[in-house]
Amino acid sequence: MSLTTLSVTDAEVARFRTFGFLHLRGVQNDVVPAISDAFEDVFANFPVVGRQGRAGVARIAERSEVLQELLLADGRCPRLARRLLGGDVAYVGGDGVRYDGASYWHRDGNHRALRLLKIVQYLEPLGSGTGALRIIPGTHRRGGSWDTVAAELANPLHFLGLENTEVPAFAVESAPGDLIAFDPHSYHASFGGRDRRRQITTTYAAAPESTEARRELGNYLLADRSVL
Image (cartoon, rainbow, N blue to C red; front, side):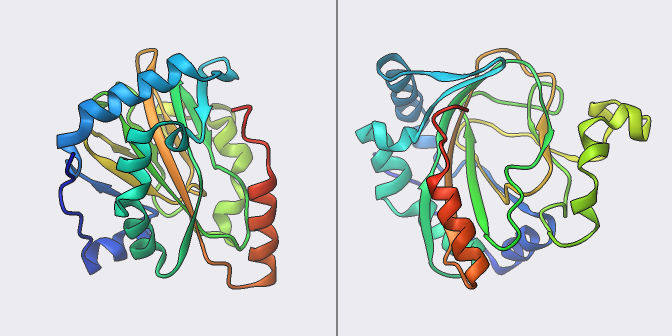
């Protein structure tokens, strides 16, 4: 199995730092069948846990030799993480998930100093009305006004007079073989997708540059992610 060469331009790095996400199209089109088969094999042979609308297997990449090769061993995702985070990184986990229905506006954690990158791939084509990842650009920035809008985005109809689907955002329409790299502190959601949408993630942390970042990284690694 071979992977398309992955390169990221300076302009793409700037877009990621400005908006909090980057969409890379078709970089692994040639291995989509192998990844899809490996996903199904893991789900058939490992415990699946979760809650209504979201069920999965934690650390899926380590549970399959195929996924270890395609997501970790080849260096492609770590290279992308180093490029976007601007230095040394550490792999800190990831999931394989089947989604049913909507995923409402949220951030993945509220770290003040820890810098993270989540690399997502979907195994079905997704459009704006069929479950594509939606991101509110710029909300990855912490320590500013975006940190105060959790209530508004948890209930936009009450606070803003907007349905969840009307919140201004960018829908990252994707196809199998695409990668979406985003800062998980960005507000993100998905709506309108059919049941059993398949997603694989790998997450990387930047080398901590402060005592607070080291503490947050330690807490992140100790957190129980077996219940999704």
